[in-house]
Image (cartoon, rainbow, N blue to C red; front, top):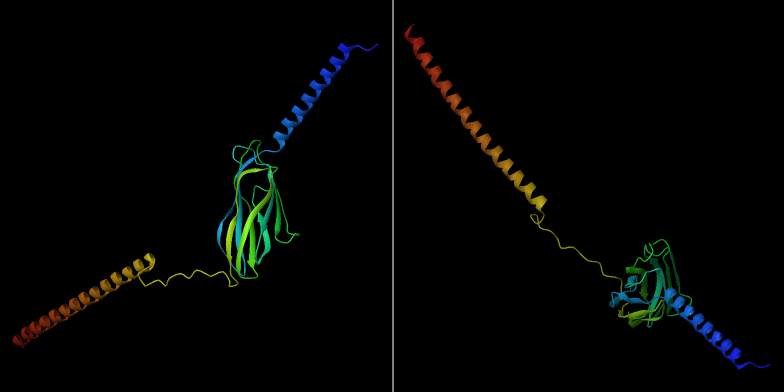
Length: 224
């Protein structure tokens, strides 16, 4: 016999079970997929040269534990990816450049302390210009998600990275050289004056010796 009360009880139980199930999944999802504060490039503008130019990827996990990140970085124009290095925080680091104009960067942190946050470099990327113009770098999918995302815009030139030439130093520009020169000057002056003084002393002794000899000669003549 059909019993409405039993059906209502069964339906209510199933509804409670479904709510509990979805609540559990929602809580698990929030635990696994945190949202970091920001991701950005440094520098976010400037020039990419024809030999090699470094661009860093910075991540700030905010108040969340940093356990890793999966990044899609897209770039346009006549620029070519060369290589990359991961930060110390990345116990596992990988870059996939199989798709033209797109880098998939993966950093996984496993040896950090529970709850440890991170704000710094996760990857240093090296690019070179193959055709002059401009290039725009933008972040695509980022996992975990980030609150703010800032790419960069760069000028592309085929010339090599300019080297910084140090200005020519004068003889007294360097403190060590100046002190050494001053010491040598003082020593030279001291040696000169000491030589002159010794010369006068020597001359005085010779003159005194001559006077003594003359007196002795006069005395000896008297007794002859």
